[in-house]
Image 1 (tube, rainbow, N blue to C red):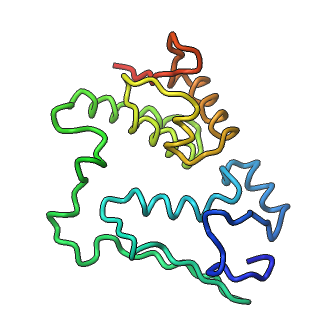
Image 2 (image 1 turned 60 degrees about the horizontal axis):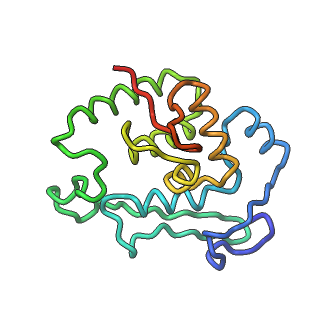
Length: 182
């Protein structure tokens, strides 16, 4: 860690971001190669926690010393029978009977790929879409919950979605729905 502390002794959910080189970090931020500062530990852990085969004993491990920084990411599918690797019902956004929703999701993903967004931005938009689909209204608080973003980045994400006609306002103030072409 830049301050000399050992990452394994820190609460990685609450590590304060410090830049080794603020100039490079600023350049990457301006070029949209870096969506959010200080979000790496949280993103890694969240992706593991939301995985189908996550178990607490497979939690990612972080280690650092004076010259080394290591992250151990365990294979969530190791020693798991093949029939248990599928998406569980509670983690599946669309069930088999809702083929119309699956079609809309595929159209939406293709639309999203064509837009000039960074990969993390596209990923966050898809996280929200996967949670709400086209029929459910959502607000900024929902975007924050589904993506792990704080208020300002969530607002910026919604601004980008509105500017690209991916969402539209509903009758209720502060609520939006996704728009998917047919």
